[in-house]
Amino acid sequence: MIVMKLYSWNVNGIRAVLNKGAFQKFLAEHDPDILCLQETKAQRDQFEIDLPSYNEFWYSAVKKGYSGTAIFSKVKPVQVVNGFPEDIIKKYNVSGDTYGDPNDEGRVMAAEFEKFWVLTVYTPNSKGDLSRLALRHKQWDPAFLAYAKRLEESKPVVFCGDLNVAHQEIDLANPASNVGKHGFTNEEREGFQNFVDAGFIDTFRLLFPDKTEAYSWWTHWANARARNVGWRIDYWLASKDLKSAVKAAAIHADVMGSDHCPVSIELDI
Image (tube, rainbow, N blue to C red; front, top):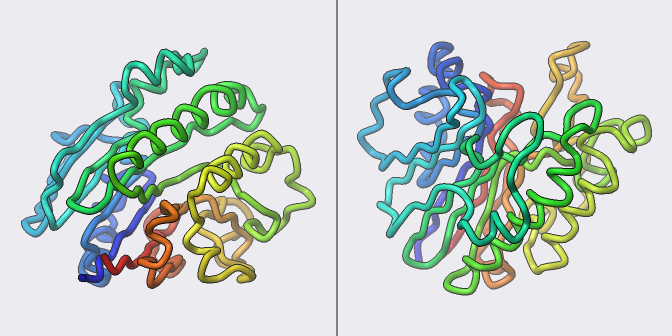
């Protein structure tokens, strides 16, 4: 058995956090075994980065400067799969909307390791006017859950990322004034609950069921981060078979460089 440190971070632009020196500082201080990124907003040839300890895998959006995910791992994965399988795309009609095709936005990656799958996702934002809520609620969330359950048939799954939803009232600073707004609609919360009902465990709440003021994203407005007026929308969820393997879960609010902070778990596996 070895303890592995798994981190997830929506960097809101890999070039920005590199230019600030924030990414290098984070890696030096936290030294993750597996690191999943969301919103990389770059093609691999648009920046320089030297990570000799890691195997790098990038899944960039077709549109430059937008969306994108990446996985870095000290242990070489058995395989890495970008995007949803075609049959799941067809079954759930994940074909896009007026904003574009989410399958072209580099939003989901899966890495197979010896004992488990790691899945990272940048869930489509439903937008302030909820114009992308239908895509998210009726297509993306069901497709993602179906994909996670399919991978689980071969090995336990841990999945992470910016899910763009606060699951419960405890997960945001001002729940009453945000009911029905993007990130806290009944539909988005139901989508998250469906993961839980399907047997996936919210690792942070497993260890800290009642912890308040634990947030992973803050708006740039009104000095929200300094006042810790935030939302918990970045997660690690795990198959129930991994429940006993989850030894730690943390939100690293002190790590700067993005409007999100990293979230992590430790697995004894």
